[in-house]
Length: 306
Image 1 (spheres, helix red, strand yellow):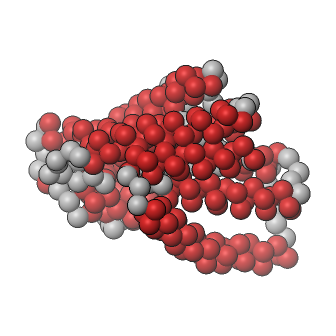
Image 2 (cartoon, rainbow, N blue to C red; image 1 turned 90 degrees about the horizontal axis):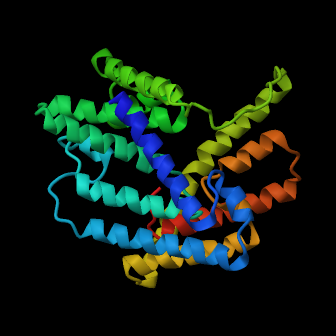
């Protein structure tokens, strides 16, 4: 399952790159691609991505399945069975949005894809209920490790958040799957970390208060951010559009934001890397921060998966 998690991550990223080449003639950093778009491309490409994502998501919602649609539910309260057809359509829908500038991460669909393939293998080999749930959890942990390049965090996240257990018979297989996934990614030449910060100085005591304040601010603002995303979903639902039109509208509105500020395209890692490497004025940080909140609210509110 560790190898499966690595190869599903590679496949997803390669599909993103292929779609980027299809619509822009270049692949890689979404912000760099968005900077090269003309005004009509900035509006049209995310709109088409939302339309395609909406069609695929609607098609998946119409399938009659007797399995879970979410890997966390399948592991935590379900029987470990994930729908392959519905899952593939949901992953493909996410591909359509994230590869056309959607302000969403690709890690969610990557983890779901790895867990879904693990569920398929577990059912193929007729694992019993407990072993099937654990093997799906291993697939998810491998997906986290490959997507974030964080094998220890991958195992601990699934153990704590999904399984709710740190017992050795649980954490052992998860660590093995995560480590295997991480090693496979490096062996295949995909082991580059997301960020390359400069050498970190030793922080004196006077900075400790700032660090504590940052932690407190994150603890307060993170739940508010989740409430903001829920509010954006309610706003789009109140419009009363069909699912396909809702995602298309989301793509169009996102394109309008990208015309003004291409920095908010994609998952946001480019901005953080720029913070490490360049000097930003406070008002530039504030503008990108507010527009990134708006772009993410539009992408999530419209119903896109990421």
